[in-house]
Image (cartoon, rainbow, N blue to C red; front, top):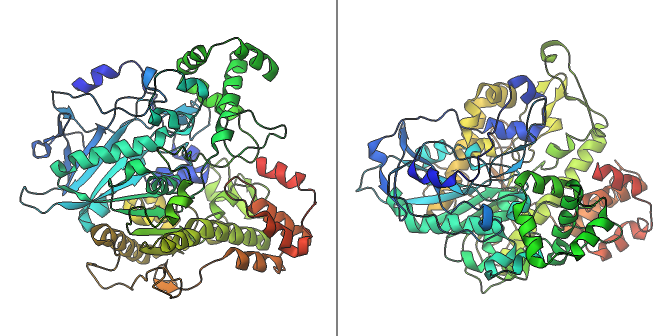
Length: 632
C-alpha cells in the first residue's frame, strides 16, 4: 500500500461490482452504454520511465504500448469527516513514490445495478483523484495540448474510470486528463446550519462538485508540464452533466485562466435556485431543486427520530445550528442519498450548479455566456439529433418491454416494440429539438453576442441494427451519449459493441470516429477545428460570421450523408409553429406534448409562448395525467 493511502483508512471504499452479461443486457440502456466505454484491465506493472515529481510528491505509472498512464493521483484531500461540504483542500504532500496504477473508486452514488444481492449504492466519498494519459515521449519533445475530460451522469452518477481516451492520446497526440468530482447532494448542497461555523465564501457556495473541477484544473496548471503537457493550452470538455459542468466553469470567476478552450457536448445551461435549495417545498410539492431542509426532515424520519414532517420540524426547533450541522456531517453517505431520494419534489430537474455569486456568477451560466467583458475563449458546442430517444426508449408507455424469445431468451427484459411509431418519433423529434435549441443554438447565439468564436455541431449517426424485429435506428437513433463511442472508440473494439451496436458499418463508423477526433484535437491545438488536420476534412463553419447565417456541422458517416454543414438552426418560434401544425397529434395531443416537453425545471418556456400557442387553447386544461406519467 502506498504511503498516501495510510491516511485514508477513515472510510472503507465500497467496491463497485459489475454483474455478468445476462444481467447487464437486462438493465437500463444508459448503464450499458457506460459499461461499454470502460477500459479493459489495467497493466499492473510500473515502468521507471514514468517516474515524475509533482508539487506534492513523486509518482510512477505504467506504459501501455506507446502510452504512459498515471491513475488515481490525488488532486485534493479526501472530502470526508469535517471536510464534507467544504471547498476542496490541496492534497497533503507525500515523500514515498506514489504508485499510480489502480483506478480510484467512483464518487459515492446510487448503484447502476439494482439486481439481487447487489448494493444499491457504490463508490466512496474519498474519490478526488485524476488520471493522466500521455504519449510516451522524450525530454526534448514539445509540450502537448491538454484535454481535461469531465464525465456525465446527471451529476449523480458516473466515473472518470469509465472513459478510455487511448485513441485520442495515441493518434491525435494530446494529453487527456480524466477527473472526478463529488456527486448528488455530496457535491451540491446548501443548508444554513453549515454556514454557522467559521467558513469561507467557497464553503458557503454549496457548489462543491464545481469546486472539485476547479481544484483538478489547478492541479493541471501546477503539474501538467512534468507530464509533457502545456499548461497554457488546456481544453475542458464534457458530455451531458459534464457539458453542464464545462459551461459552469465558463461562468466561474474562480476558473478564469485555468483553461483556454471549452467543448460542451449535450450540456444544459440552466442553474438551480438558491431559495429552493434551502427552504421547504411549497404546498404543491413543486420545486426544481432538492431542498436540504426537506432532506433533513427525511433523515429524521428514516432514523425513527420523527414520525412525520410535523414531528421532524418540532424536533429541529429544539436544536441549535451547530447541532444540526454536526448531525448532518455524522450521517453516512448512504443515509444522505436515501434521504435525497425520499425528498425529491415534483418537476425536479437534474442536479445543477448554484448561482451563488462566488463560485458561479449570480447571473448564472446564461449571464456569463452573454457577457462581452468575460475572458473570451473559443467554444465548440453541440448535441445529438435524437437526444431524447435514449430516455423515451425506457418509457413503458412508449415502448413495450418484456422477455424476448429465441436467441435472446436468456435476457430477462429488453425492448420488444415501439407502441405507436409515429407518436414516438414525433415526441423524440420535438424533445431533441428543444434540447438542441437550449444546449446548442441559444448557447451559440449568446456566445456570439458576447463576441466569442463558436463552432457548433449535430451528431447524426444512427446505423444501428435490428434486434428481435425491432429497428434500433428507430428506437435509439443518434441518441444521447452515442457520440461518446466515436470520441472514445476503444469501446468499439469490444465484441458486444462491434456486433450489436456498430454492426456492418464498422469501417464507416471508424472513419467518422477518426474525423471527429481530428476535429476535437485540432480545436484543442489551435482553437479552430479546421487547422492542422492530418488529412483533408470538410470545413467546419464558424457558427456565424459577422452578419452571416447561423451554420453548424452535421457529423454522420459516409454510409449516410457524411460530414456536411447545415443552416438548419432552430428557434423557439419555429419549433412551436411546427408543433402547432403537426398532424401526428390532435389538439389535446399538441397541448400535452408541449406540457411534457417543458415540464422539468430548466426546460420551461416563457408564459407568453403558452398564451399564444394554438391561440391559447392549451391554457386551463387538465394535465394531471401527464404529470403523473412524467413523475413515474
